[in-house]
Image 1 (cartoon, rainbow, N blue to C red):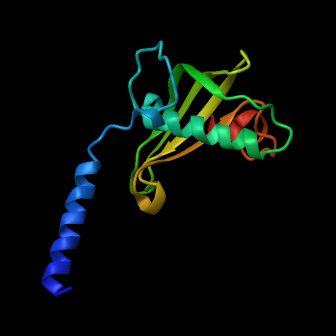
Image 2 (image 1 turned 90 degrees about the vertical axis):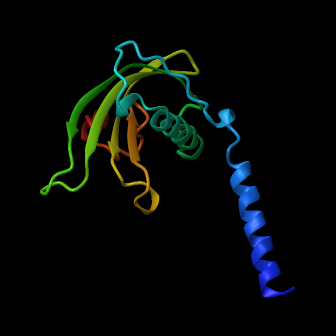
Length: 148
């Protein structure tokens, strides 16, 4: 195949893949949440809540002696504090809290932190979270104190 033909073929494949990316993928959005406070900032962002839900599911499957439950709803989402990026602090951080309803019918406090621009390869945000009673190895100190 000539160089021109292979270049055209690669361009057509790239355009076809770009056209396929426009389809909506609603199935991956598993988290259901209700925000009674009317707050619509970073704390109640759907991508943040979906990331927490999927990582919590991974955690309960892979950490020994945790009950096999899932997050079914977020309620009372609120922002505890916001530390904007500055010269002294190059990473903007939003500290949030809420109550999660679990699949077994119980509710627990959740505390989470959204770090701006700290996702993979500095693209997107990083989310750290702690559900009260599920920090088996005290990563966030007792009662999720580090994220409050």
